[in-house]
Length: 66
Image 1 (cartoon, rainbow, N blue to C red):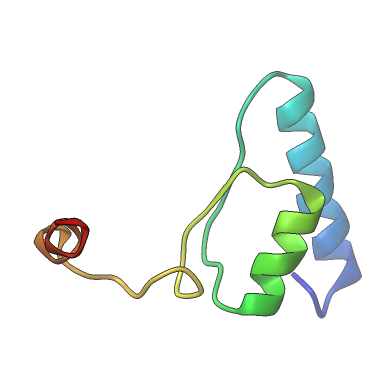
Image 2 (image 1 turned 30 degrees about the vertical axis):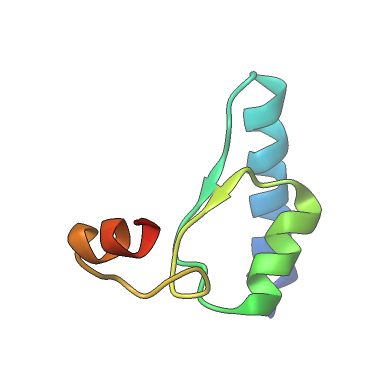
């Protein structure tokens, strides 16, 4: 997304369209802190990917919350 300005513009546009329709947006495959920050700046509502947490069993997540 960041190395290619066309990708960035497309993602920002899709986020803006979603929000104009009253929808929340989700970005997938967020793998770096710089990408996470760029998505935060354009207002994406939710993200998932290695920048947040590596894949793990749901039991592991639930045990961390306890």
